[in-house]
Length: 349
Ligand code: SF4
Ligand code: SF4
Image 1: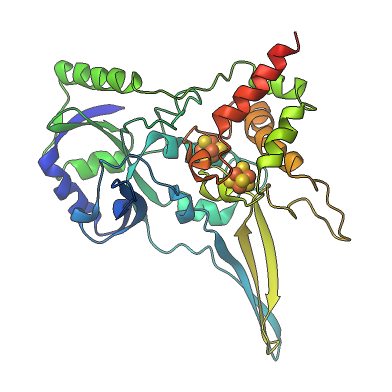
Image 2 (image 1 turned 180 degrees about the horizontal axis):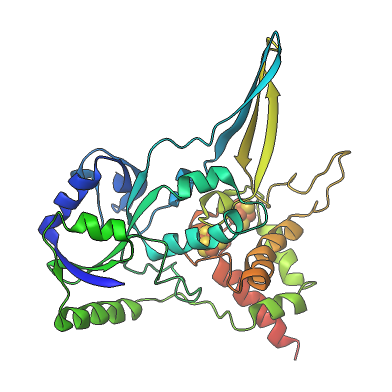
């Protein structure tokens, strides 16, 4: 990795160079009731719309590579039979300007399933392979526990990563494309002093995490507590609304729906993102539901993320962004659920 330094007043030039492509970034959308800005990832039309000072967004950038609804194929009937048309729904490279480390780590973890598994997902791959990602350092919020999930910093999966060191950004350059692009603007190779400034900024940021999850032996504890009444307690609170999966940057469960046009001349196959907390998630043909109670569904979500995925890939399918807890109307948060299960295991002594 190479390290450069970019004066902040050069950021607009970087944006303009990249604006030949479509750019997605954090932008201010509204003001909350208590007067705080609300940010969201959206297409940006100008540099002024980009706000790298954002704290967090309620939705992750997931919708740009795993859309909530996506047409996988269409079928048309003509005189000689029927024709199938597959479209991977990706036509342009997209620039993501200003992803936090947790969201880049979320992509890296999704890649293990979507790109590196026995059945790679070509729709995801088409978009994922055609991205230019600029990461940016974050300010930890009270709900962020990414540090506990080993997702507060990132080593790969981006092109360049910016860290604020005063009136300039310390730039970690990861890709050859990023290196070439930076030749067009005013940057300098980082000095030893700037290396030290970067390390100091990261160290200072790390002291500001207030939310922690003890993940020590967590997958074993989950096995031990499979029948714990704590799951019923949390399940009784759960509204089975699926919002947690909707906002989660790593949830990827989906359903397939096929429909025929009313004139019977065409049909389409669509994927819809789904949630394992929804009532009919485990319902099969004939109507049997393998997880009819809310606590069995809620438990499944935790076991997938903190037990099954860990066994398969040696890391959790949770990056500790805290979005699910922020969005949950029942006030269910990952730190509280995991904390209660761990406490239950310890009380069994
Ligand atoms: S957001 Fe909360 S209430 Fe809704 S399904 Fe998830 S845990 Fe249950
Ligand atoms: S489970 Fe919750 S905290 Fe973990 S990555 Fe998903 S939204 Fe973020």
